[in-house]
Each structure stands twice: as structure tokens, then as C-alpha cells.
Image 1 (cartoon, rainbow, N blue to C red):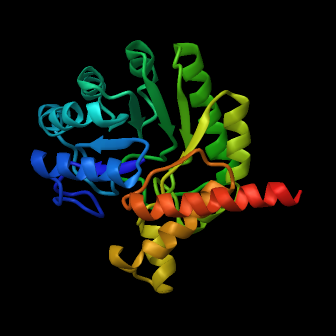
Image 2: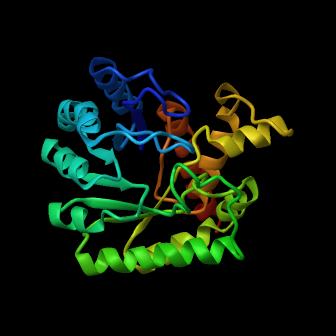
Length: 264
């Protein structure tokens, strides 16, 4: 899944594709680089991001979805029912929902739904997040969302552990270490797993080794490493900014898996 932020304030590429023309051009490039899905978002979900009025989010998102939908599968990254419905009408086939609330909208529209775990909101999720058992709590919450989606009639369900959304560095690493368990949980429910680590703050913290995160330009190695790990653990999709590099990594993981199966 290639990330396309049509926003001025997203944490990694905010403002780079804020104009419709630049967004469509970049979306075309993401498909050309090998993206299976392009994820269009008009409201930043980074910690501390300001909310965007629905009319403005519609203005940003709908024309871009409409332009890209003929080229391949497009998802809409939103928490607003009205934006999700308008994007689907424009051609989106997947609702990527960090709030975990739009299952009824996805079911009603007949499209897929990504249920992500988030503790808190953009305004407060990184203020000292706490879990007694992060794996059990996140997996339990996603299982509950899966049940709600099934009862609503969602036909295509994805589960996302929400790396970086209300989690410390240690929480994120623990969830990645136990990713295989989430894959098993998802597949038992007829769902699939999506993981998004691309250029996130915790990778900057690991890269710097100090109290301040390294800038986004120094997070590429950690991004590829965590995406490769996620794929090796059975994740069905990774959400990334650099599609070309991730596609190359995916091919390497796939070849290694084939070779390993042959040895067995």
C-alpha cells in the first residue's frame, strides 16, 4: 500500500503533495513503482495533528481518488463517514480507518475495511500510553472489531495493530515480535493483516539511540527492516512511503520463502 498524503501537515511528507495535480502525479508513480493499493488521505493522523473540517477533507481527497481509481485499487484514509462514502462513490474500494469505527459504512458501501488499533486520539495518544499486556490488549481489541465487522457484513477485513498509535518504542517492538500471533488470529476470522511502520517516530528513536528521534531522512533502513520482518511473519500488506524499495524487499522475502520451502 503506497501512502499518498494530500495534506499540509503529515509527519513525513506533509505539503509535498497537497495540490491535486501533485497528488495525482505521485499516485501514478506509486502504481508505477508497484503499489497494489494507493491510500489517499486528507487529514493527518500524526500525534497532535489538528482536525480537518469535512468539507476541506472532501475537497482534498475526492478528486484525487477519482483520478487514480481507473489506474488501480484505491483506499481512503479517513475517520469520517461522509468522506468514506464520497471516496467510495469516486472509486475507492477500501476504507482505511484509524478510528476503528467505520465498519458499518464499509459494509453498507460494499467495500473493504481496515480496522486499526489506536489508544486515544491524535491529540492525546502519545501522552504516556500504558498497557498491562500490550499484545493481549491490542489483539483482544482487534478481535472485538473483527466481530463487529463480521456482524455488520464487511466482506473484506484487514486488521492493523496500529504501530505508533498510542504506543511507546517498546510497545511497538513487542507487537512486531508477536506479529505472527496476530496473523493467526486474523486468518482464523477470514481476515488479513496490514502493518504500517514507514518512517515512524519509533524508528527515529531507534536510529538515534538517544533522547531525540532521528529525522525522517534517517529512518529508511529501519523502515525496510521492519517491513521485511512483517512480511516474513505473514503480514499480507505493508503501508509504505517508498514503494519501489519495499517491492524489492518483498521479492527478496518471497524468494527466500520459496527456497526455504524447497529445503524443507
